[in-house]
Length: 277
Ligand SMILES: NC(=O)c1ccc[n+]([C@@H]2O[C@H](COP(=O)([O-])OP(=O)(O)OC[C@H]3O[C@@H](n4cnc5c(N)ncnc54)[C@H](OP(=O)(O)O)[C@@H]3O)[C@@H](O)[C@H]2O)c1
View 1 (cartoon, rainbow, N blue to C red):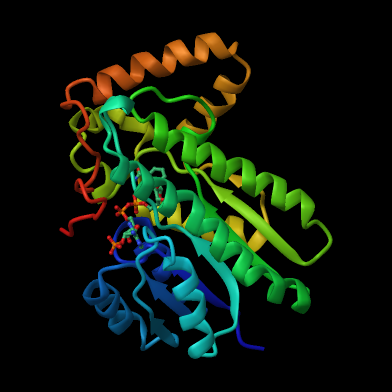
View 2 (spheres, rainbow, N blue to C red):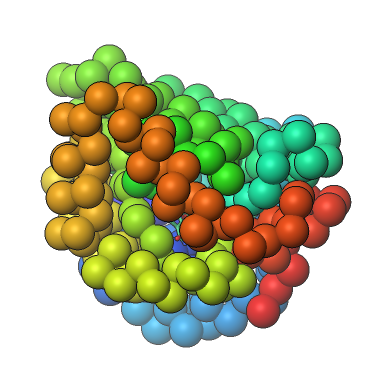
């Protein structure tokens, strides 16, 4: 029996690209999506010798982006067996200085489109009695993170939604996994210099993808790549919330403090688009 096809969002660079390579290595057909079609095509070219790959560009920052993507999947008659909600946008700096467009884009990509895609593929998975959903959250979802308040709130949303759904869907054959990476070397954090000091917490996109693939196929509910990140999250969970906020604020000020107000992590521009590298 052929392996289920994986739809991977945000597959152009970073963790999504490595997830695509990992799923292909294990023989899964792929649907790759993001805005930068040429990057998707280059990856598809690399992987087509191994598995069948379909490229469907989509802008998940648009209100109708997820709906259009679901319609395109129908047109291509693709049966999505595994949904990987990986696309994400980050923004740092004072909350009050962030323009509305950037904030809306962040919430649309990180939360609303993820919800819509999940609702779009779930009924068919339930009817088949099998399916896997892998949502890329973050260690930032476990606690308040001053300096990246809106981003960390969206990741708390993804983590909470994933855990609730995992429990709701028990016994249906469909599993939901929240993958919670710590700082990972990708374009998203390339501009944040103090993160070079993140040392033991830093992981590579490849390690995250390998861990994410294993957790997804095993149906694990929460997976934190890297021992240092696991230890930190465990330690934080046993501390008073006030202490965690203080600790988190200290770390955030040393990380994001040097950036100008409203500056945006990665390459997100004022209109909410990410510039390529
Ligand atoms: N890097 C880290 O330290 C870290 C840590 C924890 C969690 N994460 C999470 O990991 C996931 C992947 O991030 P990454 O680090 O690999 O960052 P990345 O290299 O910047 O990749 C982000 C991906 O999201 C896609 N994307 C952004 N806006 C989009 C839009 N409007 N429509 C469709 N796709 C869009 C991008 O593709 P296009 O620009 O081509 O559209 C790209 O493929 C994100 O959910 C992120 O929050 C990252």
